Amino acid sequence: MRPSNTTRTAIRGPRRSILFAAALAAAAALLTPATAHAAPACEANAPGEPVQVARVPDWAESIVVDQRGRMFATAYFSGRVYRIDAPGSTPVALTGNVGANGGIVVRPDGQLLVGTGNDLGHSLTGDLLPVSKLLLVDPDSGRVSTYASGLGGIDGVALAPDGTVYTTTVGGRHIGRVTPDGRVDPAWAQLPMPNGIAVSPDGGQVYVIQTTPAPTLYRIPADDPAHPRRWISTSLPDTLALPDGLTLDSQGRPLIATHAAGQIWRAEAGALCSVQSGLYLSTQITYGHGDRGFSAGKLYRSGVDGKIYEVPAGADPAGR
Image (cartoon, helix red, strand yellow):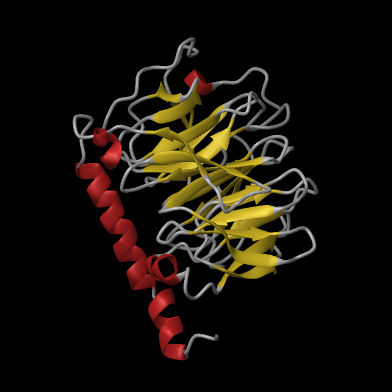
């Protein structure tokens, strides 16, 4: 079923995106540490306070680092993809407005996969009208092409070792999948309000964080998507924590950014602990790569304020 011109206008209207983003930011900003549960600190955190290393002139929705140590960020309002060559460098707009307001990952060949449709309209209608695209973006030239289409409004994006791509639609229930040969399944699995997503190193498990109404970390067997497994459930006060992006450390442990709790959580021994506190309105965390720029073993955080921080407490010396 193809949406009408009227429907397209309704679900793509930038005003709705702005209202949705502004409402979320305002709600999270009004919440205090007292209203969102403070997870206990993780053991053996490295010392050091977060240090701002860059700033994107927009809501930085998602970040990723390639093997050359360059960071790439998606911008919620402008729909651009930015490249930041090293800490302290000025972000360069790699693309124009291509609707790049969702997740971003780097393929083994260095090309970027970027999610679109992470606005209010696409998020709320994505389960019924999966019309969003996954874009292929060249990290040097900024050339953009369509990698896959027919997905729900794309928030999170995760890449499996075999090249399979998984996506989430935060305003719905569907988790999409795109196989290496191009087959698209917009409803591969279902969870309430799926947001951040990552794949285990062996590709056997897909980790997804449910944002509301009760933040929960799930494991979905890649070979049995009809039976998601509730892994770690949070307590009642965490209803207002608003977890967002998700990544894995070198031990395969999920780390989760939160908006209102102001913490970066890590899954450890069947519970959540806090790697870092005081970073409110966080959208994504990612580890660096390579031996220069945003280098291997360092943890970075993006946020609604566009600020990128290095988080020494989340450093992973074994990370590659």
